[in-house]
Image (tube, rainbow, N blue to C red; front, side, top):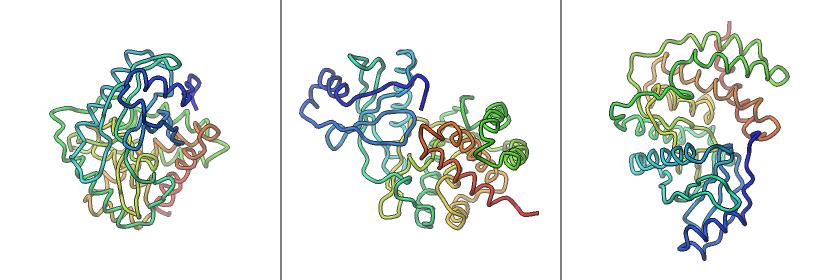
Length: 299
């Protein structure tokens, strides 16, 4: 998926765990197939998950990134009624793997990619509850960091041009360019930044019996545009449940449209980038864009 992607064999994980965490030496280790793009995932026994960054970076920035993710995870634990991973340990580089890596608790459930909750109003209510509970966490005076999604829509213009240029054979680019011209001009609301999960895509959402069972990849928790987590409405829900989520959250038109805009930015990026290396992610982006286009007012 990435030009500088690392390979992480299970034998290497076994060696690193045995050397650095001998208390887990007798626990089985198995690779977890995943459509994720950031980490290779391995289960350690039944209760733990090891996460190995896939892209080669310098050691110290990687360590700071993993420590920041662990701090975010700790901040979220217990703040909603839905389960989220708890940080357990930070591993060090070793033979066969050049970067720090992390260990967290394993959560039961099936990712929404595999158990699709799109038509479930009950799931939509659950997701709205999660978003509300995250928004209620005190920012402590923090504001958006300025990186990635969650600040100024127009700062993504250059990236959108790249995406449009690489999507000519995949999508109706002229129509999507026209839509972006409208979405990018949406003003920021007067509301202060609030806490957001930041990446509510199907692969980060756990489902059980059609209900929300847990949320993964919580390391991006932080202050941002209040509309950011509304991406989940477009990535995860069909039209009826999507409106149920909107009603629960009491979104006005501006907030709702900005949530659509953030979903648009994310979806445009994954369709072409992962079309060959991660088809599941690419299809997710196409599905999200189809929902956004279907919501466009008719002339």
